[in-house]
Amino acid sequence: MDQRRLLLAFGLSVLILFVYQELIVRRYRGAAPVTPGAGPAEQAPAPATIPQKPATPTELAASAEGAELIPVETRVIRAGITPLGARLGTLELKDYRRTVDPDSEPLELVASAPILPITLQLGTDASDAALTYHPDRAELKLEAGEQGEIVFQAESLTGLRVEKRYRFDGDGYVFHVVIHVSGEGAPRSVGLILTPMPLDGTGATGRETAMALVNQRLTEKTLIDVRKQLIPLEPATWVGFAAPYFLSVAIPVGGPAPAVMTAVDDVPLVRLDMPLLEGGAQVAVYAGPRDREVLARAGQQLDRALDFGMFWFIAIPLLQALRFLHRVTGNYGVAIIALTTLVKVATIPLTQTTFRNMREMQKIQPQMAKLRERFKDDQVALQKEMMELYRRHRVNPLTGCLPMILQMPIFFGLYTALSHAIELRHAPFALWIRDLSAPDRLMIGGIGVPVLTLFMGASMFLQQWLTPQQGDPTQQRMMMFMPLIFTFMFINFPAGLVLYWLVNNLLTIAQQYTMMRSAQ
Image (cartoon, rainbow, N blue to C red; front, side, top):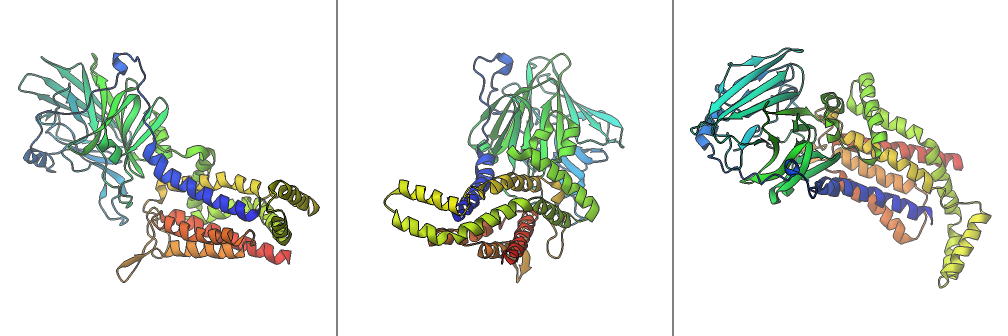
């Protein structure tokens, strides 16, 4: 095994892992199968057909009018509840903006759709979307540390009485909904519906997903998958929707409950089914950032919504280090540069070992070529002579393999940490880079040019040029194509990730140049 093949294998491994993470894992994280023989409470719920008497477009428009919404405001959220259906007509996060402009409107987590969040499915053939609720107060405003509630009551023409009791905390992203249904024909269970969030301004179109925690396993489906088929879930700890940096999920307070991911009239939704006990059905709703610390404080294993992969034990400390460096530097771009430098310094011994071995392997390339020509028809004899050649020159072809293997977890840990860092959302760096969570684009003549990404690709070409040349011409040509592949792949990556890769390449180039000078 020569070092050129090893480098090629390493580069292809990185590419395959990127593709696997971005295209396969996110798309095909399977739902946990329904357990055969489960009891009545654990059976998969029926499809969310919602064949209720739906609200007309006029009614929906009226219910969305700002003057008619019942306003709720806490230190971190500003919400509006519709009298028609007692559902969320709006929910804004006061600490997050819609765009990179700091004066833009607060981020909105409720999309304009025919089905609004917190719609109830009452039995199999009705919902409360068209019921007019009467609140017990005109508004609710809470300061940090305070708690309060609004009670909504409605009665259908058939005498069915429904009560929704919204309870809010003054400084949290979790609110509770307690549901009571009584009267003739009252169902035994109630389904609570959530719908997807609108895009959160990152430009990550199509990256919204339906997500659930089922039997300690994270299930994640794209909205395309949800539209294609109904996905029943075993009793779920929580279920909802995720955008790149935000999350809205329903959590059954009484313990895991059956749920489904499905679509109605092409509108993706998730429904959590809960029994109506004597105290009613109670659900907690989290609507806020996918911030690890915030999710951990909220409990209910919500921090599992941030999947750091198999290298979580490296990614989480690196994310904490990034936050610390930001407190020191005041700029997340500078913090990324500092963190990348620290990681590079920590791996200097591994890099030096790899480089020295590559230099030694390069020296014996002519002899290896002669052996391949001499024993081209006898692979057994060729391998024996190659091993003897390695022994005489005290070269171990596997010496360069171990350092690369040891560096891969660090690389992917840092990649994952930066991918999940909500702190990079709308975080400026310098010059044209005003949002480290968005792809870098410098507008030139009305065209967005990925300047940072092109610099990154150029740095990879330079790095390849400085790498000791080994192997046959075919392998060398394949290695020179790697920068092109990575440049194309990184065009739509967040600028923070591109910055990390560029800085890592530049540090590697400087290190290679220094070692080449010292070896002369």
